[in-house]
Amino acid sequence: MLVVRELDLDLDAFEGPFDLLLTLVLKEELDLADVDVAGIVLHFVERLAEREQLDLDVCGEFLVLVSALLELKARGLFEEEAAELADLEPEEAAEELARRLAEYRRMKEAAAWLSDRLGTERDRFFRLGPAPLAPEPVRQLAPQDPEELAKVVRLLAAEPPSVSLAHMALRFPPVAQFLERFRALLQRRSRFDFDSEVEGLSRAEQAVAFLALLDLRRSNQISISQAAPFAPIRVMRVEEETAATDERTPAWTARSA
Amino acid sequence: MDRPLRLVTANPLDQLARTLEALLVVAGAPLPLEELAAAADDDPERVELALGLLSGRYQEGRSGIVLETVAGGWAFRASRDAAEACGRLFERPVQRGLSQAAMETLAIVAYLGPCTRPDVARIRGVAADSAVAGLVERGLITEAGRDNGAGGAVRYRTTPLFERVFGLESLSQLPRLDDLADDADDLRERLQAVAGQRSA
Image (tube, rainbow over all chains, first blue to last red; front, side, top):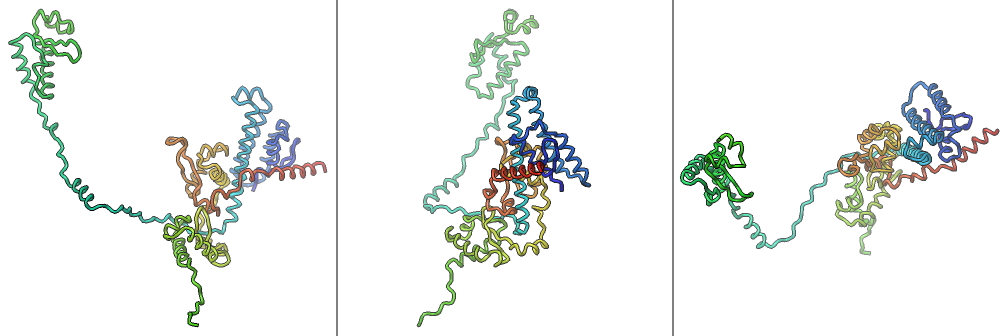
């Protein structure tokens, strides 16, 4: 099997295995600018060509290492441009790359250690089963005073208060009833106070009364005024002159004119 | 001489040791000392003594069953002498055919875990999705929460099964990373050897 880091190199600047080159570069004992990266690629491709099967893992590993080398070298050769391209200073970028390469190298070593370990532990056989289900622990209660318990049980046994269903039986008087009432009122008086008229009625009845008021207003039989929000609502019978002076409803005025 | 002759002195821990044997043989995973003590309903210190007694009985060369501490607990396994026979009877799906990528991913999760797939990808320089999925399927790693709470990337850690397959008492038995990559002397020697070859 082809192992990338044992790839034998014969370059102008360096002769030996690939991982040694990598280490020397990281230790700055070898100037990357002197290293012919294309030569490394050539060596690798030649070794690869000697083999019948393409090992994708090996190719992937090689690509990662060589591209890292290449980036490192490019930053070394074109320091100013590299600084423009990246926020990092070239030294910082090189440092970062070197750090990553070193981290990856450590992890590769760790993986190799695990592989070795798996080899030596090949003869480990053990039972593999689901975790046993322990029985649910039964909660133990502290001893209780019978009188106290009886009191609590009595509390629980008491009939719960019946829930009010009043809202379901809300009955709304017909709007017509209030229409009649207000029309009759307006026959006798030219104006009245809505609030005092509906005083003492239920909330629902007041709402229906208000609807009747709006209906009368829609058919332009009355005009409505209110001095301020929540102030008493004044209702007036519409007559020619009243309608003309009603500033709040010019549209109504026009039609009634 | 009216005292009856006693040929065998019964070890006071024998009864407890028998109980522990029973617990260990029905367990599917290593049992920590506290769990054994709780199940045996006995004092942890006595349980530890009894386990020592059992360790003497169940060891390589003396028994086909070996008692060991692994993955943070006590468990029985087959003796290594019987490995070949066991291999004829059982598959080993967990560790068979672990690729180099899987090994590196496993190493990263074991050393840096809990860590996310992007963490692994950053170190290895390639996407880690399939390697991580394969390790999860084998039960060697498992999900361990998310980065920055909900919505972050899933984090992974190794499982007790990982420690068991690799024969580790705990993750602290892994060699220090610094020791692993600290091969400067070795490299220097090789460098000198190469230099010697060149000058020769």
